[in-house]
Length: 130
Image (tube, rainbow, N blue to C red):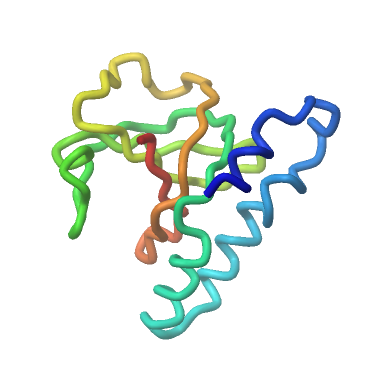
């Protein structure tokens, strides 16, 4: 929607606060951890779905992307397992044609990704680079 896009070009005066990004990621993760039913998780996932986040992270590892219902663009690609500044682990799914050679363990990067899922087994938020 156009409304969301207009917030992207704001001046960088509020760098220390993440309020413009909506709820912080630890709070999002914690709300997923509190869900008991798959239906609750789905509703929560839908409410955050597609929200863009600019993330600074350190790579822990790179794994093959797998999952049910992956878009063709990401099937057979790689997933970065990364750690945010506060120690929270996340996953970032890369498009299958995206070169991931640079993402070695310890590599630090920043990218804008969109929220896509919750890994209930590993208790990690999952983002996609589109």
